Length: 205
Image (cartoon, rainbow, N blue to C red; front, side, top):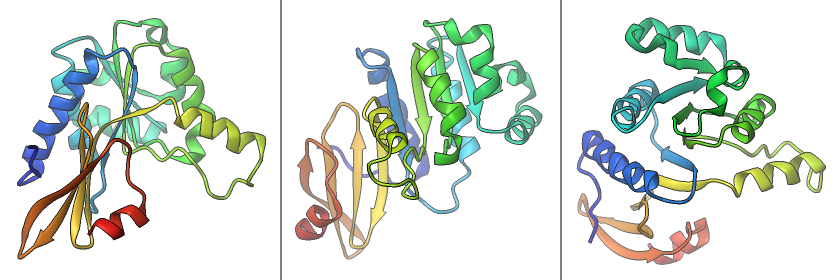
């Protein structure tokens, strides 16, 4: 039985285990989600980079040049491994199918630069806390359907979210696991093959 991590460091170890399983799978697009406020996602991204770079040539991508400049400043030793979505798509590395790509926090407004990069890259791709869909796009529109099809190409690798009275966790390739909080302790409630919706979570908590 899997247990909830005691702290962020334990959660990051669980994340690494899930990503290691991903490297041995036939799929190639994976999401990693930490649904917490106030996290420093650059630290999570570079923790994942350090882990994955032990297994293969690894790159980091961001949406804009400003984020790239800050990351290159803080991690000078790997500055040549850090790109924007667009610049990575325009680089020769886009065709390196034996490499690993990490994308940081892609948002709906990044879709026009993020999706082409994803389509052109055929190596293992991990996206940290992505938000792919945009509720402001009209229902039934061609763009919405295109985004929905794109979302379906991704598989969740790691997910951890505190809930009101519980928590939801997934460590690939295991099922989604729901925990209930009582007296500051968490107890396993039920697992699910697919991510449970809000109503299912409410009923089981």
